[in-house]
Image (cartoon, rainbow, N blue to C red; front, side, top):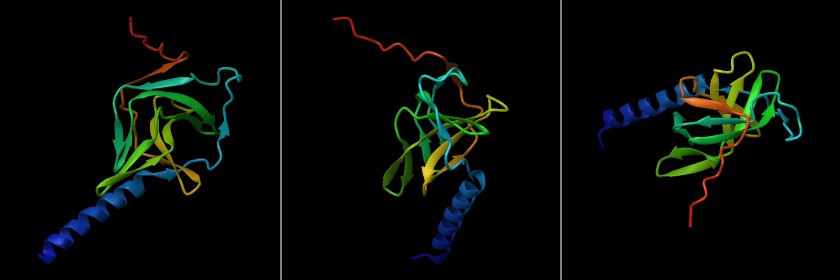
Length: 142
């Protein structure tokens, strides 16, 4: 086996892991859940038009639902689990999109890791729209 190739691969892996760690930070470990009966603290839904990803995490497109709030922002739960790809497989994690209270155009991903929320990436450039109503379900005409 070529030692320089192995060292280069290891170096690349370490660079990716370092970039991921530097781009993430811990969010609130216990944001307060938002009940459906609460008044409008923020739009109830956030629609993301295309898949967003950071490092090995892939956030699905679709309608995210306001789920929790803390002192710095709002947590919108993904329409399905967030994929974390590795080697030949994937882990499925609970997560979604975090929206800053100070600037509602500042979007980040979040995932649950080790019992706490970890904020990742910067999705502020993602094409999105806030909604107060869910999308009407499309019923086929039979």
